[in-house]
Length: 234
Picture 1 (tube, one colour):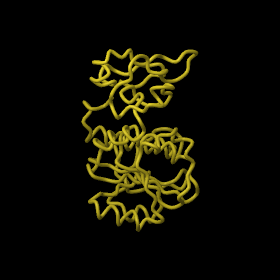
Picture 2 (cartoon, rainbow, N blue to C red; picture 1 turned 180 degrees about the vertical axis):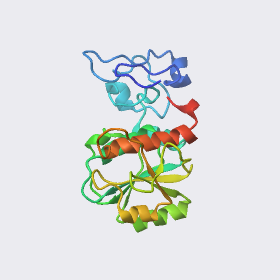
Picture 3 (cartoon, helix red, strand yellow; picture 1 turned 45 degrees about the vertical axis):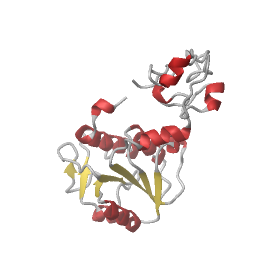
Picture 4 (tube, helix red, strand yellow; picture 1 turned 90 degrees about the vertical axis):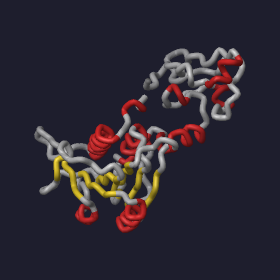
């Protein structure tokens, strides 16, 4: 179940120790505030829980099952079940969409996000999800290609260019890197040259292109539909 702004953790979120201790569990924040308030009753005897959140409440944008968990515990749990696809985005002109890409990659549990080009990027759009997502920097495409070869990952560029294969009809590799360009110029010719294939996204309106962050979300969801175990989704 996805977390709502005033939701409570599910029955298993507190763990058996909390149940045996007779803990009352979380309380909701009042006045429309996000998350849950301080834990009521005896605290759960579980190392995943963060004493600060138990004491002060947890207002983070996390699913209910992770309420009161420490950042390290959440990351460790996510790492235990990440999907084998990666996301890469070129960043030659300080693209403002990278934060959105990171947030979506977190939602679909990508193995990692790779920033190619400039190291600095605007994190505002990530909505703090970069704390839970592995993010790697590559100064150039050669570095990304070397990593892909080392890990046996197929590079798939996403761009509406002549000769591109429709994303709606292609079978995406399970172990792959979905490579995106910047808003406007799209994937560079050099990037398309290192990709095994380029996939386009079907459009039917008047605009020449769609937002790079939106395109990334569409491509990631295409991978999820083909390869993910949907029974494990929240």
